[in-house]
Length: 352
Image (tube, rainbow, N blue to C red; front, side, top):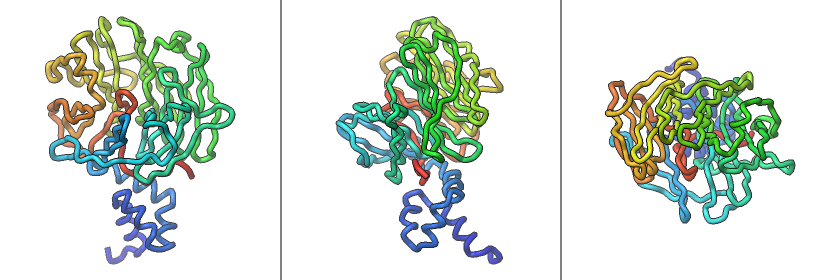
């Protein structure tokens, strides 16, 4: 260690600080401000921030927006703190439509505008433009956040308007939208199909596309973020005699899906994607059938080796797994109702 330059030692220490401490450290001197503002520092700090102590659950209701830590020793929520939105809104009419590396893509429901927001640093960026880009309509649109090979944060916006599909990509680097081609089956453009938020895993954004009818069609749409090509893969072979919902989770760059099926009681199976095929990891009885009303309270899933099924009030139940504990929690990108998110505290900026 004595042979290492002082600059290297300082860099290594600061990249391990909590995000809020990095913000405070910028005020120490001009040299530290410059160092902590470089993209290399932000990228390395972000990669080292994915630990359970930095995970937070953000919950929005009609009166408040609160953030709670996830306590690693009992896998439940810690005390909440109130968050003030740094942008104009009406009665907390804010929906979270995607998130990645501490950035939340949010929609202002009264104007349909999209924003990128880092709730840790409070920085935000409006994505809407005068030429109608960056406006989101719930139940018709789908959003996915991702990072490409050039370390550029991007937003994929899939829009369905009157049977016409439009796909647009926003680049943080150039601060603009552009259209990309995507040809898919005409029936997927119908509002009878529900598109999930995108889950980023291994250089690909994944969307579940599920028909609202019982016994309907269910598929997964994949978007390679570097080639910008789409393809369709099959859904796990789950029973189709009831409601079907797939919830995607990225765990250590391996895609998993919680597939729920049923009517008045819901069963949940866990699958993992290998190539273009799904392999079942576990099913009932490890996850007991639960009533539809209780299933509707599920907001998200997290794991540290075991899986935890979470609600707004806390842990619903634990799924014991014969696996070594991970070094951190991995949240699902989906959050029921779009009124919350699980995110990691970082200093990633919504703008350059």
